[in-house]
Length: 229
Image (cartoon, rainbow, N blue to C red; front, side, top):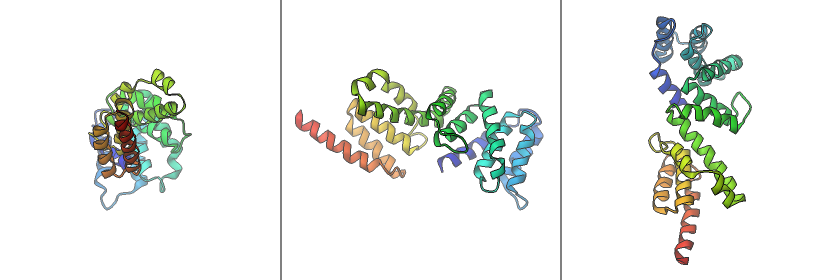
């Protein structure tokens, strides 16, 4: 659902300032208005034709139309993902985020967290908040894995402040996974149970299934630590 919302936001931000602006405006209008004559295939082809001419925004939109209508456009998977890769390599931060997202989840491409993180970081460095939060979630998972095996090694090799920096937009964009990760880092590193609890309750309201479990675990740890003090 969150990814679909990102698609709609991106389409609204696209401006026809590249090659063939009238054609791009026409494609965007057709896609967004969805009149009686709307066809997923026709919407895809409008952007794809421009993508073949080198228009970066159309490359991204071609993929997004494919992603929204995967069932009816299944034969366009290879082409649309290639468009996305081309746009990401060009430096488009939205393309980099979407590419990182699908690699991160193994959608249409091989699952590879390290490669996903590379693209997410490139996007986040350009100010993309969705990419920043997803990267922060991935780094939190890595941090916790290291922590479970070797606490001193984890603390030495991963800067929690860097992770917190990537997660700082999680609340702004109501990303439940990001808020869960943020709460986790704040509790594990800062032992700030009050703030962690606030964040976990918000994540739970947003539908994060693990929030209540994490809250129960943190409450128990906090209770035991308070007794020792």
